Image: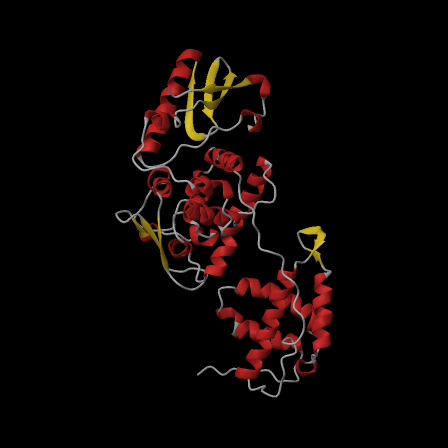
Length: 385
């Protein structure tokens, strides 16, 4: 039987923190994060004796941390949320010592002090134009896995870690679902795959019987994402914000809160609400729904609008791309033939989307398109019919 020497109530806080890290934190999924939080606690409180720490010491630690420069941005200080999480960890350390380590004569000095205010949760969501630009650029990325990861994040609301941990053997091709045996909250869940997510896995990647689907590591995707988003000029947008976009989109598609929580893995409606940033204009049609059965030619014609096309002329070759459809591109020497071919591809794409129950995107305004080499490119509208 393994013997464990529990620290004394008169030990330095540094010894207490080290013991907690090795016996409690080590069993948590948040272990790597707690290592950094305990390091901060040790820097501020490590020299005090455990039983001599008073609320005034915790207040001093709190105020000092709130004025500490952010490690990745010296223009701002640590957030209230960061400091609050450190204090919550410190409180749990005291409670653990009292309830499990036999130090019941202690009092938790963290309980009565004022906790930092936490700023409202992020509400950043991609605009329609930003989402088109992001997917278009990701589709052209040298590693197709990167495009697949972004698409899955937008279509399934899975977390980055859940996507990177996906295994081929956990995909049910018949039911069109993927099973997640381990998630952030400790529960397993089964995530339904939209048609776009299913196509990504089935067509763009190479399915295997077993093994990891993606080769990216957490550090690798973080580095790639940072360079990628900066190159697009999309500001203040994190990878985790894709989860906000996905959850909001699911609600806008008509799924109820219970159905969305089943997909996203949220255990409470309050947490789900923090991720939902529904765009008001998308609710207009629900206020005045169109009568069922009125599928007139006029309504159908709305879906066959002209779309902006980027025409690039290089080395006697002409290439046509549609910013609103990342998978349509035609190349040739005869401009008329290339335009007709692009028109045919555009028509086929729109018809396929309608047959599958999807609404084609609205054409992007030309003035919002970012074309770097204006001398060799031209933007014009091309109609599918």
